[in-house]
Length: 218
Length: 412
Image (cartoon, rainbow over all chains, first blue to last red):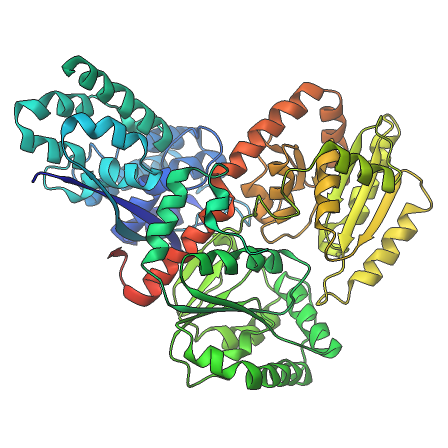
């Protein structure tokens, strides 16, 4: 009983059907009309995509505005948006539109990109599956996390915040079943500021911090 | 020799291999047929040569069929290729009839297999008419476009669009390449096989033997561009860049490529290249047979810098190969090269022969940076562009096609 079933997820990116944006006003209009999955992809699923080094910002809109529209002011304003601290994707959309509208009112022109540098609106198809691994008690959690794929870390620690009723991660949901024995783990999980971490870094940090608790308990 | 997934344990993470087995295990027994137009030469054939054994290892009944064509057919499909990459070409009614007729001939042979398959993946425009020729098909059909069709010559796209619009889905290498179609368009970057002859680790003895075979000087810097002799790869621009560098540094250049059986233009481009070489003993133009994978591997490993100065490019697997060998790549600022080459991290993007010459000189004057970039380049490929990631995305697509078409999330 109270076993944690480890799942994994794989994403396949697809064109959303929303026409690409070649200037800021087009970006605004497309953001206003695109599906929530599109917003979610460009804000949150960026963690699962190939990237080279630390991007300035974790959401694709801020990166595009900075790199291609060459608007550092707007890049900074969009870059600080934290999708996990904003109530819903609709709220996130509203905040984003407010920021772009404000910027459009400040600028004398509607900034545009050169051909080939347009913003493409994407979304993902996700397949979720059980890995066959289970976790029986909190003490085993760090060891199991250490062997999880990036897909599992994303699914249980990041994506869960969109899925669970309390907008928390799956580990914390499960640990709440253990009362006091799970509380110190939950507190540690809550303290992880994951906004600037890659999935590999997240895994390392979770293992390290949760491992310390196990060590103390043991 | 057919490879198994276990062979990649240690190159990719163990957890990644386990993930593939779990995902693939749920597709056991499905019949998958890939169709393209050449068994040897070019990135598509290379991808299929590892993908089929690995899909089989996961329990799928995977097979690879190659359509046979006439020289007239391949001239037409080369025009398609050029037109889709934006060059104005004429595709006549007669050309379209030739295209369809060759596919009809092939369909007579392939019909039982294609009609019964659970999933058929058609690669590039050459076999695209097969869908329309197989109305009794039972499975899902996917069109996989490997080339850059971001700015096609419109009449050519209009000729091709009716042949591909009825597929259940299409796959492009990058979002910029996708074209409006009435079905879902997925994005899957290609990848390399680290255990193939072209990418496997080689002994220094073998590398030295290849160096000696081609009369390359071990004591002078070597620039290498591996690609078909194709205008889009800009071999003349590479020679121009080499000449600018040669004025100040004693470099050598290798331009090596094979001729693919579906590329009739190669000979004309090769002639132009030879004219430009004009007898320079430090430019080595190597026309290699299609199976010279280990030779290409050795050339990339002995290079100081890999060049891929394309002016149009699909994804650019030769770039991935160069990065995997821990070499900085100086690449054209086009297509998929942009997804792989990052200034000062994995190499440099350039737009002109002058730009290429500038970066070559910069790197040759900063030898430590060549090693530093090379290390980062290899790890970048390990994370993002090995076949394990590629295979996972195909398995994800297959699950979507078979279990969740229309859904954005599928629980297995």
